[in-house]
Image (cartoon, rainbow, N blue to C red; front, side):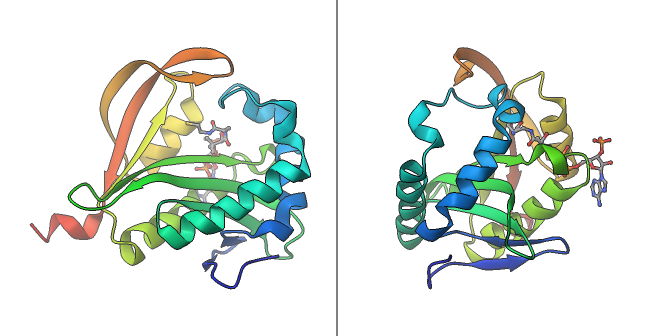
Length: 190
Ligand SMILES: CC(C)(COP(=O)(O)OP(=O)(O)OC[C@H]1O[C@@H](n2cnc3c(N)ncnc32)[C@H](O)[C@@H]1OP(=O)(O)O)[C@@H](O)C(=O)NCCC(=O)NCCS
């Protein structure tokens, strides 16, 4: 299921990896089972998005992104590895003076409200800050996404601004609250 180059992070309830092509079926199941749950908060998806072909391609891209360190698209599985419980993507990684990336995430509707997303993100942020030594992780949410706002606050993200008409979500340009978390270790290093 996984590439030999992948990263594995273990939390109390999940095993987190950057999955390889052979996990396409698990990813497709996650997006099919959570279609309604995610529609309101994500870009509109084409029919092609919900195919094995799309997920094989996407997971191959994930491995290429990992190798080039341009993106870290993590999937959290239950320990039995029978289902994907959540996703978090660290994308648009920029090195050099910025050392920053964007963060997106989603938890399966049946695991919402159980602290699972916080558990997954705590582990992934640890990896991004400690192992990749990135300085800034940026996460944006629609003002109406109360759960996302609460999650980011719990994780120590701070509000930095408000972007009008920022992202095309579910077919509409939506305003977003801009937040970021700085690598805690870097506060002492300046
Ligand atoms: C945004 C999203 C990931 C938040 O998930 P979540 O389950 O609310 O987040 P957490 O994992 O932090 O769980 C917090 C809840 O679990 C409870 N909880 C239980 N045990 C907990 C624990 N050990 N630690 C933290 N919280 C715990 C908290 O009290 C809180 O409960 P509440 O729902 O009554 O407020 C989820 O709503 C989602 O996937 N939404 C759709 C996609 C989306 O919006 N993505 C983000 C776009 S910006």
